[in-house]
Length: 157
Image (tube, rainbow, N blue to C red):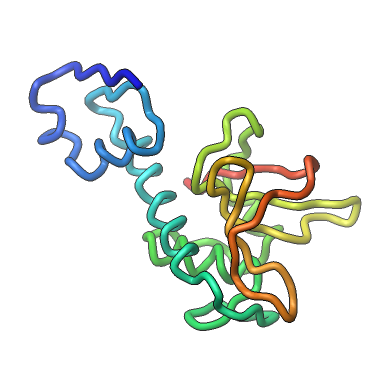
Protein backbone atom coordinates (compact mmCIF):
# COMPACT_ATOMS: atom_id res chain seq x y z
CA UNK A 1 0.00 0.00 0.00
CA UNK A 2 1.31 3.45 -0.86
CA UNK A 3 0.32 6.49 1.17
CA UNK A 4 1.10 9.86 -0.38
CA UNK A 5 1.29 12.65 2.13
CA UNK A 6 0.76 16.02 0.50
CA UNK A 7 1.79 18.08 3.49
CA UNK A 8 4.13 17.47 6.43
CA UNK A 9 1.54 18.34 9.05
CA UNK A 10 -1.27 16.17 7.65
CA UNK A 11 -1.85 14.31 10.89
CA UNK A 12 -2.21 17.56 12.79
CA UNK A 13 -4.63 18.93 10.18
CA UNK A 14 -6.92 15.90 9.78
CA UNK A 15 -6.54 14.24 13.14
CA UNK A 16 -4.32 11.28 13.84
CA UNK A 17 -7.17 8.83 14.40
CA UNK A 18 -9.04 9.77 11.20
CA UNK A 19 -5.89 9.53 9.08
CA UNK A 20 -4.76 6.24 10.59
CA UNK A 21 -8.25 4.77 10.25
CA UNK A 22 -8.31 5.62 6.55
CA UNK A 23 -4.97 3.91 6.05
CA UNK A 24 -6.04 0.89 8.13
CA UNK A 25 -9.25 0.45 6.16
CA UNK A 26 -7.41 0.41 2.87
CA UNK A 27 -7.22 4.04 1.78
CA UNK A 28 -4.34 4.61 -0.60
CA UNK A 29 -4.15 8.38 -0.69
CA UNK A 30 -4.62 10.85 2.11
CA UNK A 31 -5.36 14.36 0.96
CA UNK A 32 -5.68 17.39 3.25
CA UNK A 33 -9.14 18.87 3.44
CA UNK A 34 -10.91 15.57 2.78
CA UNK A 35 -11.60 14.45 6.33
CA UNK A 36 -15.22 13.68 5.43
CA UNK A 37 -14.21 10.35 3.91
CA UNK A 38 -11.86 9.56 6.77
CA UNK A 39 -14.54 10.52 9.27
CA UNK A 40 -17.09 8.26 7.57
CA UNK A 41 -14.54 5.43 7.52
CA UNK A 42 -13.84 5.99 11.20
CA UNK A 43 -17.56 5.84 12.04
CA UNK A 44 -18.00 2.65 10.00
CA UNK A 45 -14.92 1.05 11.58
CA UNK A 46 -16.23 1.90 15.05
CA UNK A 47 -19.68 0.47 14.23
CA UNK A 48 -18.03 -2.71 12.94
CA UNK A 49 -16.07 -3.08 16.20
CA UNK A 50 -19.24 -2.56 18.23
CA UNK A 51 -21.09 -5.24 16.25
CA UNK A 52 -18.16 -7.65 16.70
CA UNK A 53 -18.15 -6.98 20.45
CA UNK A 54 -21.74 -8.27 20.58
CA UNK A 55 -20.74 -11.72 19.33
CA UNK A 56 -22.83 -14.36 21.09
CA UNK A 57 -25.63 -11.99 22.09
CA UNK A 58 -28.99 -13.70 21.56
CA UNK A 59 -31.36 -12.86 18.72
CA UNK A 60 -34.66 -11.42 19.93
CA UNK A 61 -37.24 -9.99 17.56
CA UNK A 62 -37.50 -6.22 18.03
CA UNK A 63 -34.47 -6.01 20.35
CA UNK A 64 -32.05 -3.10 19.98
CA UNK A 65 -29.45 -4.05 22.58
CA UNK A 66 -27.43 -3.88 24.59
CA UNK A 67 -27.87 -7.57 25.46
CA UNK A 68 -30.11 -8.92 22.64
CA UNK A 69 -30.70 -7.89 19.03
CA UNK A 70 -32.62 -8.48 15.86
CA UNK A 71 -30.84 -7.72 12.57
CA UNK A 72 -31.70 -4.03 12.23
CA UNK A 73 -31.44 -3.58 15.99
CA UNK A 74 -27.79 -4.64 15.81
CA UNK A 75 -26.99 -2.20 12.99
CA UNK A 76 -28.92 0.61 14.68
CA UNK A 77 -27.14 -0.02 18.00
CA UNK A 78 -23.69 -0.32 16.42
CA UNK A 79 -23.93 2.90 14.41
CA UNK A 80 -25.54 4.79 17.28
CA UNK A 81 -22.54 3.88 19.46
CA UNK A 82 -20.34 5.16 16.62
CA UNK A 83 -22.20 8.48 16.51
CA UNK A 84 -24.69 7.96 13.65
CA UNK A 85 -28.44 7.50 14.08
CA UNK A 86 -30.21 5.05 11.81
CA UNK A 87 -33.92 4.31 11.41
CA UNK A 88 -35.33 1.18 13.07
CA UNK A 89 -36.06 -1.20 10.18
CA UNK A 90 -33.79 -2.72 7.54
CA UNK A 91 -35.84 -1.15 4.72
CA UNK A 92 -35.70 2.29 6.32
CA UNK A 93 -31.97 1.90 6.89
CA UNK A 94 -31.47 1.09 3.21
CA UNK A 95 -33.34 4.27 2.28
CA UNK A 96 -31.03 6.30 4.54
CA UNK A 97 -27.74 5.00 3.10
CA UNK A 98 -25.73 5.87 0.02
CA UNK A 99 -26.05 2.83 -2.21
CA UNK A 100 -22.76 1.32 -3.38
CA UNK A 101 -21.88 -1.58 -5.67
CA UNK A 102 -20.37 -4.85 -4.49
CA UNK A 103 -17.11 -3.82 -6.15
CA UNK A 104 -16.93 -0.61 -4.10
CA UNK A 105 -18.16 -2.00 -0.77
CA UNK A 106 -16.00 -1.38 2.28
CA UNK A 107 -15.80 -2.74 5.79
CA UNK A 108 -18.56 -1.15 7.81
CA UNK A 109 -21.02 -0.81 4.91
CA UNK A 110 -24.45 -2.30 5.47
CA UNK A 111 -25.42 -5.49 3.62
CA UNK A 112 -29.11 -5.71 2.65
CA UNK A 113 -30.88 -8.92 1.67
CA UNK A 114 -33.93 -8.46 -0.52
CA UNK A 115 -36.63 -10.31 -2.38
CA UNK A 116 -39.59 -9.31 -4.55
CA UNK A 117 -41.34 -8.32 -1.31
CA UNK A 118 -38.61 -5.89 -0.24
CA UNK A 119 -35.66 -5.82 2.13
CA UNK A 120 -35.84 -8.50 4.80
CA UNK A 121 -32.39 -8.63 6.48
CA UNK A 122 -29.36 -6.42 7.20
CA UNK A 123 -25.83 -6.93 8.51
CA UNK A 124 -22.52 -5.03 8.67
CA UNK A 125 -19.89 -5.92 6.07
CA UNK A 126 -16.69 -7.19 7.71
CA UNK A 127 -14.57 -7.81 4.60
CA UNK A 128 -13.67 -11.00 2.75
CA UNK A 129 -17.31 -11.70 1.88
CA UNK A 130 -18.40 -11.86 5.53
CA UNK A 131 -20.71 -9.84 7.75
CA UNK A 132 -21.72 -9.44 11.37
CA UNK A 133 -25.43 -9.96 11.89
CA UNK A 134 -28.19 -11.23 14.16
CA UNK A 135 -29.60 -13.99 11.94
CA UNK A 136 -32.84 -15.40 13.38
CA UNK A 137 -34.69 -16.68 16.44
CA UNK A 138 -32.67 -19.29 18.32
CA UNK A 139 -29.33 -17.93 17.10
CA UNK A 140 -26.80 -15.37 18.28
CA UNK A 141 -24.91 -12.42 16.79
CA UNK A 142 -22.13 -13.86 14.68
CA UNK A 143 -19.69 -13.39 11.83
CA UNK A 144 -20.88 -15.29 8.79
CA UNK A 145 -20.14 -15.60 5.10
CA UNK A 146 -22.64 -13.70 2.91
CA UNK A 147 -24.61 -16.61 1.46
CA UNK A 148 -26.36 -14.88 -1.42
CA UNK A 149 -25.03 -12.93 -4.40
CA UNK A 150 -28.35 -11.04 -4.45
CA UNK A 151 -27.53 -8.40 -1.85
CA UNK A 152 -27.34 -4.63 -1.93
CA UNK A 153 -24.86 -2.46 -0.07
CA UNK A 154 -25.34 0.88 1.61
CA UNK A 155 -22.83 3.27 3.15
CA UNK A 156 -23.90 5.18 6.26
CA UNK A 157 -23.35 8.90 5.77
